[in-house]
Length: 393
Image 1 (tube, rainbow, N blue to C red):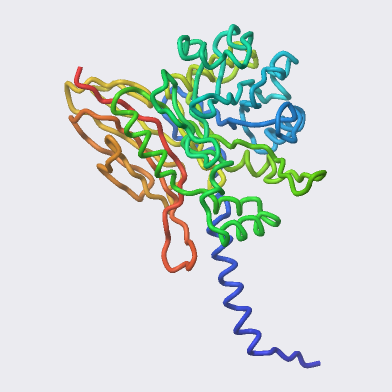
Image 2 (image 1 turned 180 degrees about the vertical axis):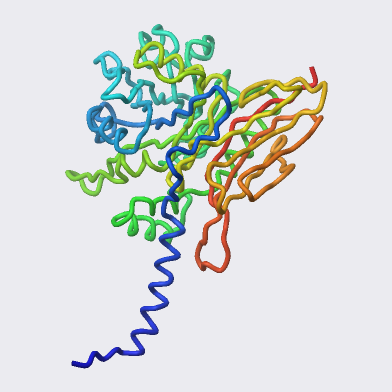
């Protein structure tokens, strides 16, 4: 029996298969052996998902469902932020769920935009929502405050100087798709039906957020987090909604990694303080884990055998050596920036830099992936650190 192959069709399918392989390589998650850990000494890297909506506001998931997803994606903690309500907190939903720590915050609608509120004092959860903003302006030390989706087309930040806040969402999953063109959206949504990692195409370098952050850092410490803003609840008709993008794909994509001095203990109050202290002190970094697990990233400064980490002040009375280590050493580009300007780059998984100049030093790492038309590799956002502050006195 002879098999006849249509040569014209063959010339069509071979290029299509080639393109498909490249596309999958571009958006699929890279694998790093789970035992690799090159993080800074004396720290435990705990990765979590921040800014999640549940059935208590406009999300589709229950706490039980979220905890099950967290376990699948190996998230160490979740921070819930339903709109303008503490009801989940009073219903006892802040606790451990089968090994996953779930904390309750709030996304507050305020005159200056949406704020992510993480209470440090129970007095915050006792206040009426309509009085919370005015109270926080005067007593900001009783809660961590982050500017949520600062460039959202419907709910942007309108006042960057309204008072003391801890930081901003450098990336926000719900905002990422809003600046993409139709072709990118069709490709991402179509591909996500088969591969959840296809949503990675929606992640762009957050240039506007980086620029405003560098300006804010000129006058005081402001720290970044990465947020999913997960709802899994898209309305397609008056009486029908679909759970898209799924909590699973959202939780896989964006993480905030905390560097804490000790591992979680399993005690709610103790571990809650570990999370909040790490966030408050800027001892954390943003990872686009959808491309590759970022656990193991390390950024520190050494001066006279003393080590300094993200969020720390270093007095510039002698030379300082910066060290950056990437958990993925294949196709990456590491950038060390001082006051928003690149001072050194490396592509071998490690960067070192010696200086005696003051400034705010932070790190950006990009994975190099082939993007259409696949001629050359381009930078895809992967890791953003908080700064180490080198000061004169």
